[in-house]
Image (cartoon, rainbow, N blue to C red):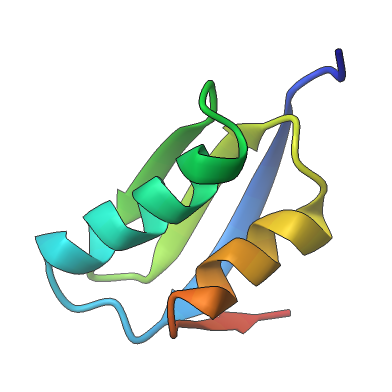
Length: 69
């Protein structure tokens, strides 16, 4: 089992709690033990997960949100 790491991401396009749930659900579908913290006004997403940064970004992007590098 991989060790969890923290990814700090800037995500554009999130406007409401539905967006927060969509992002959280997308990540937890790939890593059920991931914790996701979203600061909606700033667009900051912090993820504690065993997923790679690339997989985390892809999960969020696949939901239709723009993840900044």
